[in-house]
Amino acid sequence: MKIAVVDGMGGSIGHQIVLELRRNLPEDTEIIALGANAIATGNMMKARANRGATGENAVRVCIGEADVIMGSLSILIPNSMMGELTPGMAEAIASAPGRKILLPLTHPRIDILGTGDTPLPKLIEQAVEMVKQMCEEAGNSKEVERDV
Image (cartoon, rainbow, N blue to C red; front, side):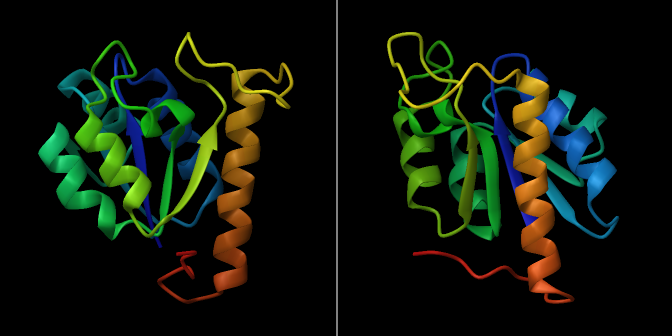
């Protein structure tokens, strides 16, 4: 299974997601770090992502490989992360065939109703548990069924 983790700014959320994935999934799980900037990519690589790439073109080229795409909800919002997440990146991520597992952390001018005040570490734990269940359901298969 290939999991793409997308983050920007300092990459701290992506770093935490990659760490939690590494703690809970088999070692052969491939994690691709896709950063809106080099610092974000570097921080996800420090958490032991297998590969990393930076910028809009890297996201456009690599996102289609992923069976699962993880990050904050902001990765689907053009110009989020203080403008680092370009409209092209948001479009590529939203259009990618992989299943999206997103944390409800968004742009300051967007409110998501129906979400509680769950702390970030707990949200990441829940997201990783979803991926873990997907891996178990897929068995030894290298690819997870994608919702189109």
